[in-house]
Image 1 (tube, one colour):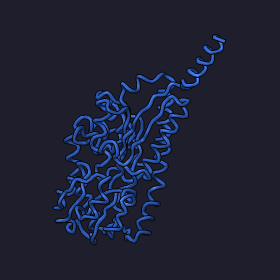
Image 2 (spheres, one colour; image 1 turned 180 degrees about the vertical axis):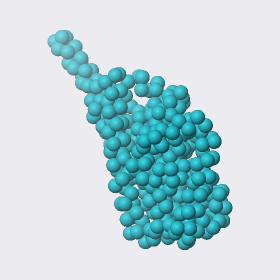
Image 3 (cartoon, helix red, strand yellow; image 1 turned 30 degrees about the horizontal axis):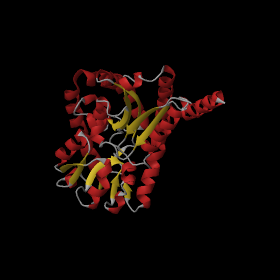
Image 4 (cartoon, helix red, strand yellow; image 1 turned 90 degrees about the vertical axis):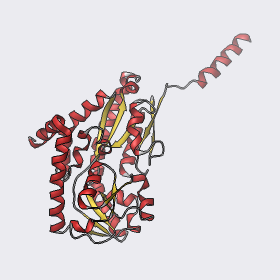
Amino acid sequence: MQVKSVLAALAVVLAAVPAVAQTKWDLPAAYPVNNFHSKNLAAFAEDAKKLSGGKLDITVHANASLFKATEIKRAVQTGQVQIGEVLMSNIENETAIFGLDTVPFLATSFAEAKKLYAAQKPVVARKLDAQGMMLLYTVPWPPQGLFAAKEINAVEDLKGTKFRAYNPATSRIAELVGAQPVTIQAAELAQALATGVVTTFVTSASTGRDAKVWESLKYFYDVQSWLPKNMVFVGKDSLKKLDPATQKALLDAAAAAETRGWEMATEETEAAKAALIKGGMQVLPPSPALQSSLKKIGNTLAEEWLKKAGADGEEAIKAYKAM
């Protein structure tokens, strides 16, 4: 009788023990749940869990719900969270190489953006490694266009407008066209538009759709100035705590997410512009005068970026031009 009681008690204890020891990670991100980047993150987390046999459970915190966009990298670097996603150019002030993909008109198509990434990746990986982090994958946004409340036929029409800035490149563009730069991250954009805090900005049609900009603005000029990228990265200390098989599962999930994400970005480009039109916006090509002036501004930004980036910038640009 006593043996039966012991066995019964042991069975209860064993039943309470999970079949697989699970590691739980938090992944802060800055964009809405329905944005294609966030959907890709959710698929990445699902893949990591499946490939690891349930050992790694990643919770995605979208729309800056855990950390603000500008806080995410620091949160991973200091070990507050294990993994995160940021817009690379958000941290350009820290290290110029992160802003290479926002040099205007350097890479304006997905094919060019992929080559630029190949040239940029070794330098970015090296910078992150020195800070105790590892690059997992990147995914681009659709080509950036100009949103405005009024018609913009020449760069002079931007003078005095309240121009949304979300990285150093957009802040500098605002200065060069005589606009008023206003720092607004994606999660705050809809409110900023509703209250008139911003009236013009350069961003993707995808972000425009997320913020339902047609409720405040009328025009989208498809200038295709650059294709910025989001990057997903992990703290090396957190990575080292995983067993080898789980590390491989994470890296395999990341590789799949990168392939899937670039495909999603391509599909998103036309779908997002169609959503703007459906919302009542005019989606237009830029006038020759506007495009010409913007390219001159792009040349200025390219020169300034190279001075900031130094040897790292020269390395990446040389590699890009050789492809």
